[in-house]
Amino acid sequence: MTPEQYCQKKIQASRSNFSFAFFFLSKQRRLGLNALYAFCREVDDIVDEERGKKDKKEKLNKWREEITLLFQKKPQHPVSRALLPHIEIFTLQKKYFTEIIDGMEMDIDCNRYKNLDSLKRYCYKAASAVGLLSANIFGYTDNKTLKYAHDLGIALQLTNIIRDIEEDSKRGRIYIPLNLLKKHNVHENDILHKLNHKQLIPLISELGIIANKFYLSAIKQLPYADRQSQRPGLIMANIYFVLLQHIIKKSKQEEINKKVSLSTYKKLNIAISTYFGKSWISNG
Image (cartoon, rainbow, N blue to C red; front, side, top):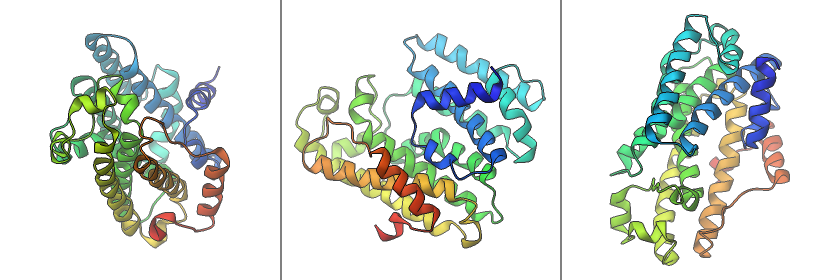
């Protein structure tokens, strides 16, 4: 199995929404994005393993070593070997790979966040760093595009957090800032033990408003000159924005314990429409 085949298999196994953004890339950019996403899956899967903190941290440290080897042009792992040819072509920076690993380590060390600022720091490492690397792979001419990638990463991660409240609670994780829980009179047990869904409705609505603001901020900061090259990111933005609106709607119907998803047909329709210039966010 070649490094590229390894990455493709990793992506197919994840059944991620990100695959819809890959269709509209050139072969070179698609291979680069495949390798980047496979790296993200590798380090993210470590966090979700049924292992102790020490073992997980050791695995993440091995990836830190592997990234150092990658930038010394001596990669060992299939994913980093697949990444190697794209590092120079797309000017991918080592610090972002390191920050992604740091974000995964935050998941090991921290299962609560005091306020929105501390959560945003996590979102930056877990998602914005990925977005900044992706922006390089897609190509851009204006540095404002990096601000767009930063805010879009936070919006996407907040959407994941809202969508996965129950799933995360099974692992003992609550990403919703504790000050927001207090504001809406929601106790941690309400989330961990699925109690009193009515109390979660205004909380999810407020988080949704915050996420929507990041989507809108991202779109406003994307220069017109880079909109075509950044279409894969815009596809993701539109898919996740529509998903977020569905989640908020379902929460108001007290269906918080049901994970919301979009059909393959709906996501493909959004992808094609985005390719031809439609934006759900600006119209939202």
